[in-house]
Image 1 (cartoon, rainbow, N blue to C red):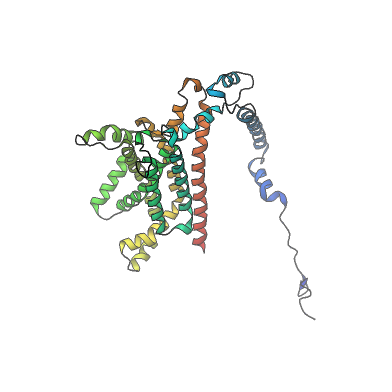
Image 2: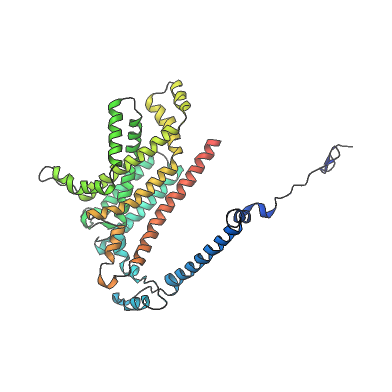
Amino acid sequence: MSDISLGSSVAGVPEAVPRQPPALTTGPVAWLRANLFSSWLNTALTLVLAYFIVRWAIGFIDWAFINAIWSVPNSQTQACRALKGSDHPGACWAVITEKHRFILFGTYPYEQHWRPAVVCVLFTALFVVSAMRRFWRWELAIVWAVTLITIGVLMWGGVLGLEYVPQERWGGLPITLILSTFGLAFAFPLAILVALGRRSSMPAIRVLCIAYVELIRGVPLISLLFMASVMFPLFLPEGINIDKLLRAQVAVILFAGAYLAEVVRGGLQALPKGQYEAADALGLSYWHKTGFIILPQALRLVIPPLVNTFIGFFKDTSLVLIIGIFDLLTAGKTSIVEPAWQGFGVEVYIAISLIYFVYCFAMSRYSQNLEAELNRHRVR
């Protein structure tokens, strides 16, 4: 007779029946007990906060949806003002219905709004394609070049039968996307070069990179924008004038490059010294060692702070309002200057914040997924 009988015993020892852990020790219930109801004090605080959160949520739903006004005839806002002063106030989303084109596209010619709308779609599609790892090939650079040329043609016009629109008429979301995209696209390679320069063995390059980083990081972005808008034209020869948007773009690139350089340098310093020694032992040149071994690992280590910096600079583009450039936030502020719509800024700022949230949240989630994927490949 075999020692194993029907899989129920081995050498006369009964097989252990697998058991599931108690339901209260794992899963959401266990998390709630450990974090929100671990003691009488935590339980009381949780219940009190839950009460206020529920009350706020109910009030917000009443204000934003149930009692809201979604449209008014011919900008007649009397109904919105009457509702605002009533016992059950509600949001006046009619300001978004009436002013959404100005908020999104600024003073761009009304009949040409399809052009900046296509530009926003192209930017978003470019971000989505660039985020997919299967498209990380040299052809992606061609896609970027063609897309950016198309964006320039659409915004400026003057060719292919398109009406010419000067940069002074640009505004809204396209300006925000242009400043952030070009700013980060050019600042990132600049940051890598500066970070490598700070660790260079050549004193002149190291001192120059340190001076650049410390000087730029020592002043706020507003001061750089003022310098680019007011001071820089004073040093140009008579008759030469550089566009204000281009000057602001250069200021954003220099500012972002200094901050990103410190993030990249942190990744280079966090990399174990053995990686450098192993690359040197293989006889690799400096650029082969840096490009194939050092930088990929260093950048993987600093994905979270890199994306945090990207998100911060995407929102910091709103500071260009101080030099008269109509970005998304500035267009939203200007849309409620009209007396008929004064007093309804909350609705406008909520709408603008949702647009910022969509882009920033997408960047945040993508960085988390990319970091997890790279960590899985490293474990394998």
